[in-house]
Length: 302
Ligand SMILES: [Zn+2]
Image 1 (spheres, rainbow, N blue to C red):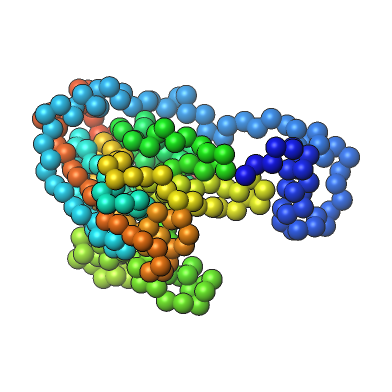
Image 2: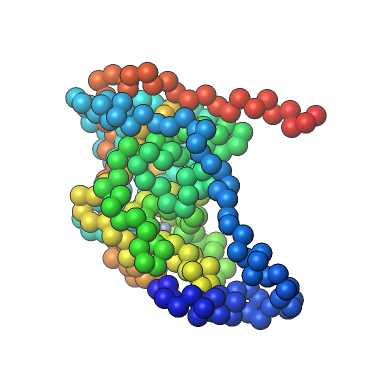
């Protein structure tokens, strides 16, 4: 919880930032430097905004063309044609999902969590886009509905659908605990990609990338800066809906952390399945065209 006394918060912040005790003496103008107002790194005013009413109008008369159940502590892949929609729905109980997206025709192009975060902030909701990696950098999907958009930021600084976490993985688990766990989202997504593309696990692992943490409630501790998670506010029936801007291969893992209220990388948490549904509109949204890859010529100054 944030301290109501700002002086106390400042003392705590200085006390626990790294290193625990500063090795460098505080300069005379320290407070003046701290008081400088921040500027937004990537103002997105120049970005073409998605036309949500037009995208949503394409739902009229849409037809469900696929449905994939994601078992707890496992992942499945799914295909979404460009111009179609997909929904991720909580069905039996609070559950977090880890989402990967690839260009279905060239899986070297994949979701770029870091740049999406730089453009849209730490947590995504309606109107935000999921961008692809360099040198492609185009929207892979646009969020067209979010039944948890009411949550906002809570008193701890937590919010849902983050692009700050990476995905739980067996390597970090080994690093921190020495243990072996095979149902981390990284492994689940690796198996799902290997099955989808009929490639060895070692190749599939290289295709797995940082995720959109669907339904996960996370933030940064305001005192220590540490990444935190808390019980997801998602309830059965809640969903996140996407419009596919190009032909997509997707994979979703039902995280072994369940609602991520306590721990992951174990079989301790109560886990539930997730549902992915794919909807084909009668016609593509009016005026919609698949976005082009970045037009930068890649000469890099030579
Ligand atoms: Zn996970």
